[in-house]
Length: 175
Ligand SMILES: CC(C)(COP(=O)(O)OP(=O)(O)OC[C@H]1O[C@@H](n2cnc3c(N)ncnc32)[C@H](O)[C@@H]1OP(=O)(O)O)[C@@H](O)C(=O)NCCC(=O)NCCS
Image (cartoon, rainbow, N blue to C red; front, side, top):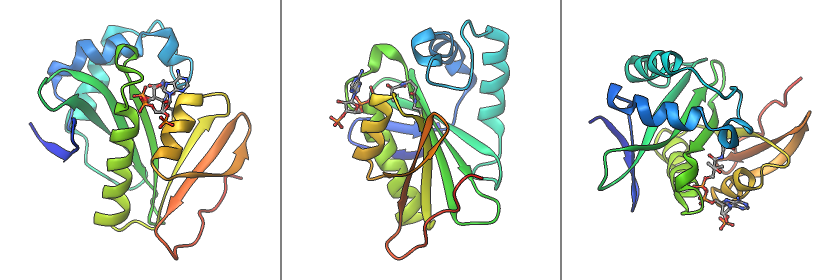
């Protein structure tokens, strides 16, 4: 297992092929897909293709998403994922995150997101992190606030959230 970070209850790690069924299950869940950029039903073959890609892709390559698996410390099964997209020209990362519905409401989203924000700002020393979320996505908005991000702009139906290292300039807003 290639771990990226650990929290009190969670391990954030690289994906492996063993994650495919659990990944497919929450991608195929309409209540999860509703807030995300994919449609349910979600093909199992597409889940297989993506997990294989996530397991082998370069980590934090500028301009591309790196998706990390989230599991409980004492159970190896996938419970969700967190994605990081490094900007090519700025010390900025965009974040995206998903927790499988049966694990919602336990604080896992908030815990994983907060730890990733800390890693990116404190350890990797990025200037800022941003996230886009639908303005009605209460759980996502609460998770972002809990991780110290604040809303700075509206982008269509989305709110743009931001947190920077102290003293770093605000991000360029979407055009
Ligand atoms: C957003 C998501 C990751 C949150 O995961 P989670 O593990 O259930 O979140 P947590 O248990 O850490 O809760 C985080 C906050 O949301 C609140 N919350 C969770 N579910 C909620 C719900 N259904 N309604 C209202 N608030 C909710 C919690 O009370 C908590 O707020 P607090 O920190 O003020 O106590 C999860 O709901 C999800 O995967 N949704 C679908 C995908 C998505 O929307 N991703 C984000 C897009 S950027």
